[in-house]
Image (tube, rainbow, N blue to C red; front, side):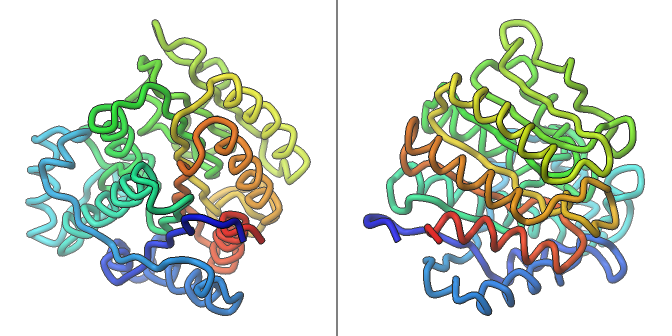
Amino acid sequence: MTSGPGVRLYYGDALRRYAFEEGHPFGAARLDAFWEEVCRRGLDSLVEICPPIEAARSVLERFHSPAYLNRLHALSANGHGLLDQGDTPAFPGIFEAAAAVVGTTLAACDALMAGRCRAAFTPIAGLHHAGRGTASGFCALNDCGVAIETLKTHHKLERIAYVDIDLHHADGVFYAFEDDPAVIFADIHEDGRFIFPGSGAESERGRGVAEGTKLNVALAPSSGDRAFFAAWARVESFLDAARPQFVLFQCGADGLAGEPLGDLRYSQAAHAHATNSLMGLVERHCPGRLLAMGGGGYNLRNVAAAWCAVLEKLVGL
């Protein structure tokens, strides 16, 4: 392993609580499957395990509207109802559970900015579909969006890279920052003509002064590793030219073969390759500022394999 600060892995019951009722794809078993594989591979002895932290309401308002937070809080207290058109049901305590996802992502960002670790991984994170004023696609809050706003306003960064290899387009991040040139956005996903959320066309490159600061790579169903590696070469070149000061990496596992909610058919080699590439890019442009966020993935074996492939590369295996 590389000398110097280590790698932080955020894990604990507060993250497990961000899970929907039995039968919903986004359940607590996802985190359990990952943790079992972490321990089986001996990765728990190679990282610093850190507890989740719940974000305060004022922190959530860096990205989300007060009106939406009021509605989420009310539905959380009632414990029932729908937060969106049907994919994201309320449950008792969902406000606090989602705030713990946000707070944990921010704790990782702060640790990286302070040099207390050289990389970090938050498995229940990367809730990239929620908008400023709405839930969407299993995402009650958008920890990615809050992190970007925090890195901009509190850490005064001017070039923040958001990189996403989740099967689904990160619409909640893309449209919130579509006209913001400080956010360098790169997303490889299954073509939105075939899958939720129906966005992420390659013609979407940013608006106004931010045109050209966004890269969407839409892959056809059944693309596999070869198409991913070709797409990643475009992403790496794009990011290198942008010279980011911090990299947020949403490494959803739902692109792997056997995923019930999509069809890109990667192997875990895609996640290992992307992580290894980003580690090199970060070393060139912003040493010690790489945060990986688990994102989606609803085949438990794939979740464990893909996330551990990321963690292995972060620790230098």
